[in-house]
Length: 336
Ligand code: AHG
Ligand code: MN
Ligand code: MN
Image: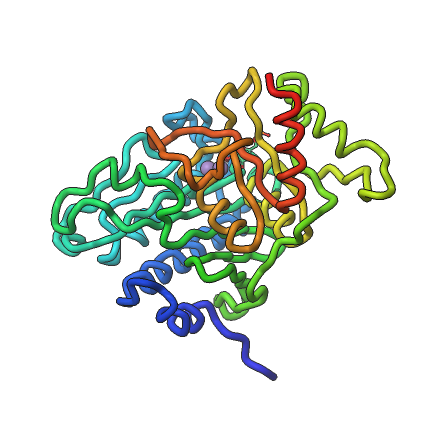
């Protein structure tokens, strides 16, 4: 039997492609893959242990925190803190960034931003959830205190980004700017194996993913685009199929493989959109562009947006480039 390439081997083999090939990023990715396995184990037994349900607390954005949100946040924080490459982490579950300012981190050069558990409102009903992460070089000098501006960098400055989908199988997908590769966890040996080398998103697709419950609140251009997706037209293969899990990582992962577009526009209920620029949109934008796709806020590339605050929200149109472009055409035509 041919031995599959493991994630550990892949990281080491591809280290030389990385512009600052010192091995630090490889070690950082090692911390992430270990934390992903721990979170996967906890999620898998979620129905057995008393770890389902709400925590009774809210995060800084006023959203109910699930027990597993806290578990995933703590697990990734601990794993990242245990090694010396990271000087600070910003998390969707924490109001402020967390500075790692003890001795072993004194010359750490990276910051990590993460959504430790994405789609967590789905966890009680056994629907796939995920983790999203984004890695930058700090902009302030090593050996000084990490600052907010180290975290408020545009997505184009990302060094690496990835996600884990805890699904019917668990996968870790990441990029360091040299394409996108996906690894499936073999639970019998506890190892991620290369299963999806050089992932490419189809240029066009048949799936649109949006929370249509918000339809009446969407801008006119989005409403018209949704109607366009639903109309019959043999030449353009319509109507399209609507698929919406409500777990961004799962919806994104499906569309990356099958071709499709995911929309989270503005609307009266979410005047700036719902998705978070730093923890959700930028990392997935980096991945989709590396796979040949597009990610915008309706006009601008997501990764060009200069962030003003950690928990900033943006509208997001992400997926197969022809579908994103068609959505743009509707937005331009029905600007309001
Ligand atoms: P999180 O669980 O990290 O707060 O993210 C939830 C996000 C995302 O996963 C999903 O696509 C979106 O919220 C769904 O929002 P709606 O329920 O408004 O459709
Ligand atoms: Mn999320
Ligand atoms: Mn989350």
